[in-house]
Length: 229
Image (cartoon, rainbow, N blue to C red; front, top):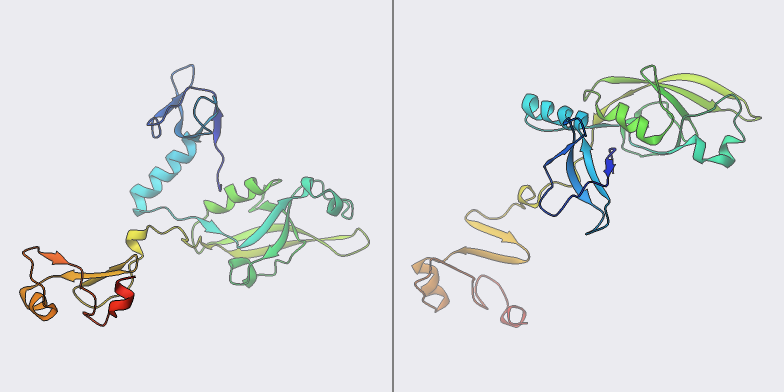
């Protein structure tokens, strides 16, 4: 997931999602989001500071947008074999892929680069980098502090600018993914339907008092053999 969660052993039951996670002092510290499973005692909540950030974006823009760089990343600390070949860099985030059409592909960022800071703020884990990037304004220029390995354990320190772009929405609700169809007709799930008028009923040789129907086999170009399978 692209965010941190608060793990809690508070008793979160089905139906509690969206309710507050409260500290012993009565402070709302999160919004209950999910559980690992029934009776496991492992639940997760969205941190209140992230919930506040999202709510402010919804009020201001009516939607939530997140910036991205378009890179595959991993922590330098977890990449032990690679870290042995780089001297003078203690932590950071290693770029192992640059997506062809992503924002980073339009910059000087390259695979094997080590990102150590975003706009002057140090990052040491992939989540640190995500947290810094996703809140950037779409279209703004982000300055990355980069250590680039150059062989023989040497590194070159660079400042690379990347224009933050909007995260592509790959989880658009189905209701918004309507395919273009002929006027007055709706197509979904492989079935085409339209309002059944008296004229259409007469053309098909069938008559019903219902206000809508599915065209029978042989009507509207649907072969009877296929329609009856």
